[in-house]
Image 1 (cartoon, rainbow, N blue to C red):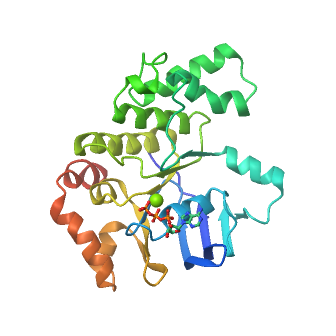
Image 2 (spheres, rainbow, N blue to C red; image 1 turned 120 degrees about the vertical axis):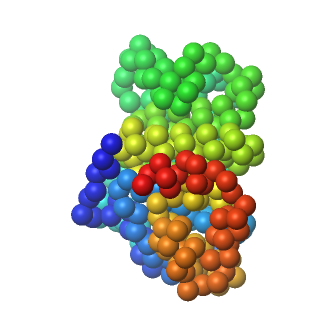
Length: 268
Ligand SMILES: Nc1ncnc2c1ncn2[C@@H]1O[C@H](COP(=O)(O)OP(=O)(O)OP(=O)(O)O)[C@@H](O)[C@H]1O
Ligand SMILES: [Mg+2]
């Protein structure tokens, strides 16, 4: 399927500085996410990847700078406009799992019950459809504890796409999965991007995932507390002027096998 390209970037990050209180986490972040991108936020542990994602979904207000969605400045928009933008996003958090006391169907139905006026029957149909999209047809009445970790992650994706979001934000979606399950999750993310046309912003330090699915990205550095580079993972690997970026990505080139299987060849 063709990915729609807008003349304007889906997301524009401008001169962003992120702090907790007075503690500086990242500064001078500047990058664009194009519509249809699978945009990877990468960097070592603790550099501020989740922090950036949380600012991008409006949980925290940046100390400085702007984030624009379709050209609209999120943090200077009215509460009503911010709500509208939030509803066009689907999110999975790094720690955020499913609600264990609810079935998969109840978990996926949650945003639809909260934010739509759909009938019980309509919601049930949508929930089954979304579960089928992530390969969980027939698992509506299962509780999270009774399915595997990989299936739980996929159910989380089903909940994130419940409202047909324009943008999907995933924080370490394959953390804790074995390599094969992680690879399947990557393939699912590609599939969802293609079938829904959504733009994907994903935090990961899994090098296999970065090369398998990333079309563009930004590399954050904990030491200098700013981005070292932005561009596609391949561009950064081969052309980054920062040795740190090249060696971070080169370890991935050598140690991964599935990047050549699913991503680059499938896309080219
Ligand atoms: N709510 C918070 N209040 C204060 N400091 C925080 C908060 N959340 C994170 N931090 C600190 O900010 C820094 C960046 O954290 P963050 O979770 O964004 O890193 P990360 O790149 O996502 O790391 P990881 O790869 O381990 O998930 C860390 O030093 C962390 O301790
Ligand atoms: Mg994190």
